[in-house]
Length: 412
Image (cartoon, rainbow, N blue to C red; front, side, top):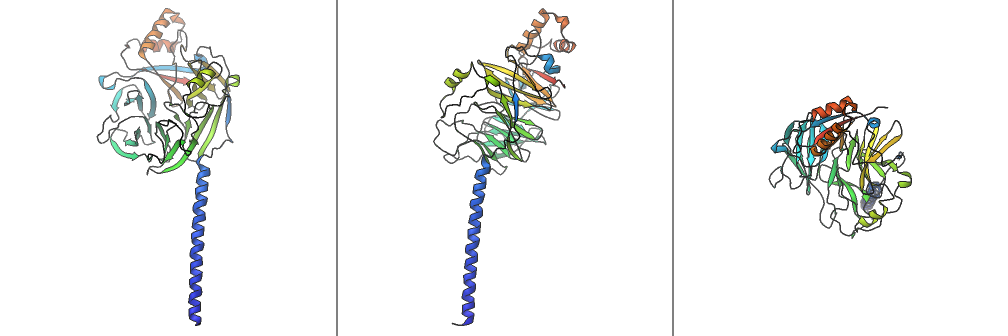
């Protein structure tokens, strides 16, 4: 055989072998990346978790003077175009306050309580939404509204900008997001829980997904093993991280940032800690909860963290209770949510935080009753700040919008 032909044939064999080797390498890389992706889906760092021991008498009235250095009240302007039902979420950006109510409206007020405008409205037209399930704000003040099957973006002035379609297809990935949070890198955390799932027929169901702004799912968190209750404002922001309330049966507070997810706190109620596992399956949890309700503190929600304090709610004997935990004192102050105090004006439940203060909103009917009780008691013995609040609120009517409480925390 001619040497040139042999050389050409040999080169062909070398090229084919290189192509096969390249294909094997690419296939290996693909499989390795899939394995890594599967490993990273639910990888949670537990190394830095802090245990918080909660102690105290649940029958205490709210210990106002031990928790707050100052409580200021501020009526929200009441107009026909901004009549508010129960407020379910509040966020702040610069000098503006954004309020979502149960009627699925998003109002913008100044931090002085003056109504400014409304963001979007219900409808099927451009820039309108079918449902206002949740909202969030980015560092530039742009507003994002979670609607059915999409997220709508508005400018801080309320002008519609763009919509992001949610990448959940029927019979492929089941998720019906009821809440979401915006990460600092622009990705969305979508919390579906067990909403819309009547029975567990798929093995690959998760509570939370992460989506980028191109509509691609890039992460999955928390395999879905049992029914999960709905909950307003499961996400809260603290500095550069997002805090995630635990699901029923868990006492772990999670945090997530661009670096990943970790167990941040474990809430230890001592002898009142729920240690019985939640029954498997998607049947109602009501029977199970009724069995443990008189013996355990459960259903942690509304977790808020500031520089020196932690606040959250929990349930005991069908009452929503408050817990304030001082990081510096390593001490907790717990009380039943209502009545929270005796002959004082104070918030029964906290909804959000702003500039290291805690924010609450109270129905004016309750405030009017509290003021009358204060006047019947020893009015002169009240702190000066509380007398000022009573003076500030003397003109409120029971048809007014909720009253805002700005609560400064003690710096021990």
